[in-house]
Length: 226
Image 1: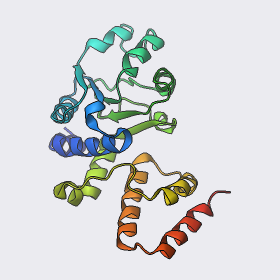
Image 2: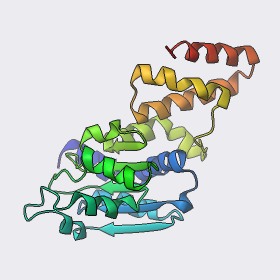
Image 3: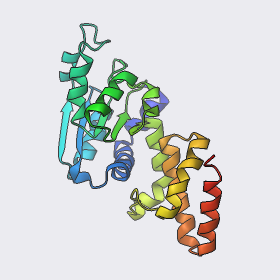
């Protein structure tokens, strides 16, 4: 067992809390979420079972059943469209396989989003090494977090989890949010970094409610539009 294996296997509850927080920011109420776990990695199943404690719309675990979509070596998908249809029913997809096989790749994720009519999808890559190609996270409305992301996210927000604070996706003044996208695109931040940035932006806005401060922020973000 590697050092990372030990760290992550000891924190399925904390990692699940991070996943829950991220899911609520992306989708809103958890009771509307369809969640699926794919794989035979114990950690993935533990995280999934922690998520299951929330009142989800649907929760399923498939340890080996999804192999029907792969060839005999379980390295390539037989029918990508069929597999995309199967996964498109789920908003949050946890994947963790002992084999290290890449289960989700760019073309598959693109087809999933097409079948979801571009409704967002959240992938949680719980494999060590990962079971999802990293470029999947570059697709619009496709969110990808691995165990390192979730661990970092939890560590950064730990005090907020302890306080039970809830940061929903609309927590930033709309007048300012309209312009933050220009700034964030220039920085090329990943989803985890964006969520952390928005957290601290909210803190700043709560501490300083002066109108001039908001106008200054808006002008700053707007300057990145060109």
